[in-house]
Image (spheres, rainbow, N blue to C red):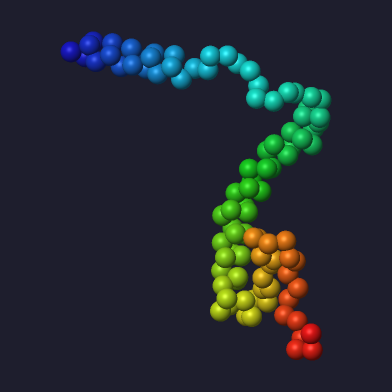
Length: 96
């Protein structure tokens, strides 16, 4: 019984490996020498750290301080409307 299970497990694992293996090993974009610059290699390592910092720390902080009832406390000013091309001008004085 254990030989049968071992054989089935091995067969299933082999089938998953063959089906999951790519048909050809091609890069999705062309390589050029700018990608081998030492600072580019450092950027490949630091980019995930920056991405995680933005999404896990900075965006939640911005969400908290940009609440309408808390904007005045934190000094947050809203940005332009993302659905129009008009820039944000702030609150204009009464004389305008």
